[in-house]
Length: 153
Image 1: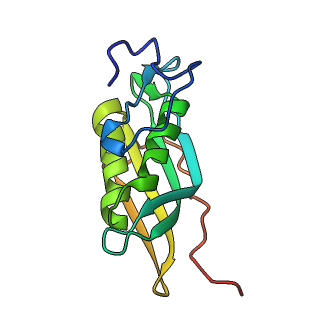
Image 2 (image 1 turned 90 degrees about the horizontal axis):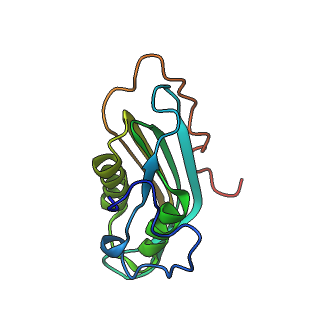
């Protein structure tokens, strides 16, 4: 987490894309509604990373849902973090779960889930899901809205 959760490092600045996810700094700011239970959703329909075996690009539609605690993730830093995967080699499972765990561990939301809807490689689409635990009882939890892969027809 950044030193000062009130002053984002990236917001309002020309910030280059990090060379890899480990170098990416995620900014968190104070949650203006920390006393409320609500859901935040980020969708990244054009996410890319690289296959660790072939080095070829892999494409996914990521959906990240979380119920904030004391902080929220600043969206520009999240975009830079996700963009850093463009040159990162990782299996779908490792990439999807790694993103969810990093956000959960650093931001400490009440609850978080990530759905990684990966496009086919070798004719097989892979969907990867991770969540931090049971969702809070009163949390409105819509479906992620990404249909199973059906090809062109």
